[in-house]
Image (cartoon, rainbow, N blue to C red; front, side):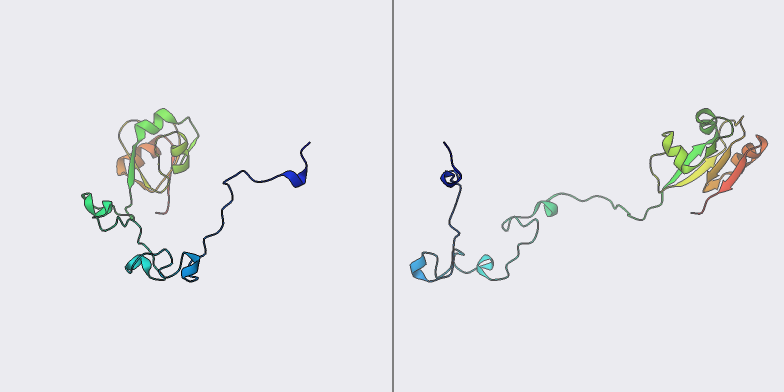
Length: 150
């Protein structure tokens, strides 16, 4: 029968901690497993991310093209004809509802409504900008134009 005092860890699973820098007799004295001189032998050594042992690092080997502006403002243009197809009478058209219907994908873009197509329903449209023709078509269909802040 197995008793608690008979339990032992699996053979080879427990290791003695390596103690370095405690004299020649310890077997890890003198250079304390750091080798002879060089950057890695010094205290406070920190290898820079991407260092490849002196070989030209990957980030410097691959070609770079163009520029990605992190503060670029994208303007998403939507035609009135598409809004007429996707929305029912009396619904509110806003950037959030446009994302729900899958017309636009990003939340942080400026929405501009263009006057291509026909609008046959009175809709309340919330957008950042409107073309002159789009505004006329919305008001002609007895809808509302609401301009959002950019």
